[in-house]
Structure formats: C-alpha cells, structure tokens
Length: 296
Image (cartoon, rainbow, N blue to C red; front, side):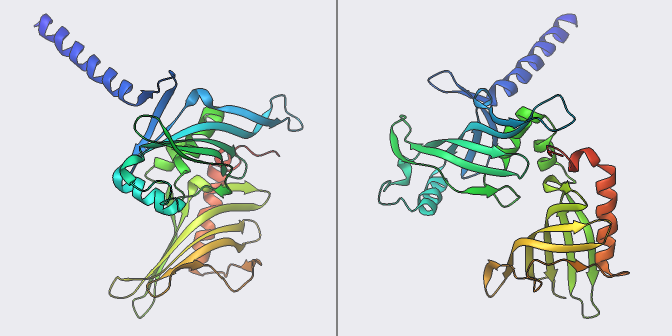
C-alpha cells in the first residue's frame, strides 16, 4: 500500500511539474518565453526577463518611485489562418506571399500603465527556421481594452512590475459588471455592462469602457455601443470620451453620442441612475484597484 501511495504521489508530482514546464518555452539564445494564451490562430508569449522600467517618477509624499513607462519583449506564433490574417492586416502580401512561411513574430513594446497604453517599438517576423521575413519600426500607441489583441501582453507586463492583479481581473468571471438593463413596452431590451479591468478613478471621475447591447423583441441584436466614458460620481454626470457603434446595416462606425464630449446629467429614477449607484458602490469598495498606478 505504501509503495502504491509513493508511486501515485510521484506520478502526481511529475504531472504538476509537466504543467509548469509546458507554460515556458526557451529560445535558442536561452531566453524564456512564458505562455499567456492560445486559440486557433495565435499563441501569445512574453519574456519576463525583458521587462524593464524605463521611466519612473517620485510622487510627492512618497519614498518609492512609481513606474510610468515599461519596456518588454513579446512573441506571437501563428497558425496558417493566423498568418493569413496577419499578412492581410499588415498589408505585406507582396513580401510574404505564402502564409505557411510565417511562423512567429517578436516585438519590443512600450507600456504606460497610468493610461493603459501599449506601443510597438519594433517587430520582426520569422519563418520556422528563425530567418527574418519582414520587420517594421515603431507603431502607434493603442489604449488597451477588451477589443485589443495586445491586452494580455499589457496585463502580464504591468503585473511583473506592480503585481496588482491585472491578468486576474482580465480573466475573472466578474470582469464585466451589469450597470443596468431595461425592457420597453414593445419588447426592446437594453443591457449595459462595465469593464472593471479598465476602471480608473481620476479625481471625481471614474473612467472605464462600457458595452451597450440593444435587442429586439425577437432577441436579434439591433445595435451595439462600445465606448470609453467618464462618470462624475458625486455630481451624477457622465460623458462619452470615445467609442464605436455597430448596427446590422452599417457595421462598426465611430460613435457620435450627440453631446460632442460634453457632460450630461444622469436623470433620477432612470435606468442610468441604477448604473450610477452601482459605480459608486464599486469605486468605494475597490478604492485601491481604481486608484492603482496613479501619480496623485
């Protein structure tokens, strides 16, 4: 019996160790790539040893520097479909004519945690033998949200420095919280959710990305709004900073809320007021989270 127990324990330990090892891949130069996620098109990795605080400040009244810019290296491997999509998105079909050639890319990125920005400093595409196929220089800054390909890269890099649980919040079951839902007399249903992973409090404003979905009485989607908004919690006002709008006829378009970015009052006893109450409760209950990485 003891022998059997020892064998069982040994097999279990081997299994657990294999899970740990499988999440790390080593390059020819010995660099460790830690796996983040995979789907049928892409696998994402980052190199923890490459994470470096490139800029920091000393906020008044503190004795510890606060990182304001972080650099790191990331890696993306491609299936045939992923390579095909990447070549199309980058418009480099004249350079890489066969998607089967493209195996992976390695990029150097810059992250600004205070504003959730990620920017590619440089990126190189390789074949399976490690030969360079194409490379590009610095890209544009992108704000990270649920619709961004690089969101997991951002979370992993920031967690290496601050360890505040960015990746855990991305993957949490309650990442999206319901602000309000309503149904009209004709059966039109509207549901608004807020992405807690993007929430930041700046002064009286809680800033976050929201998803609004409207469905008809037949439950078909009529429209979707994906927007970044600022809600003044004490005053009970809100404004749309930026966003996109989708409908079956026009697809995705820039969002025009009709207020040109100005604040509007949230009406009392409206569905939106229920959302305001929910936001106030979240900001009060998770003060450390909504104020993370801030300079003041």
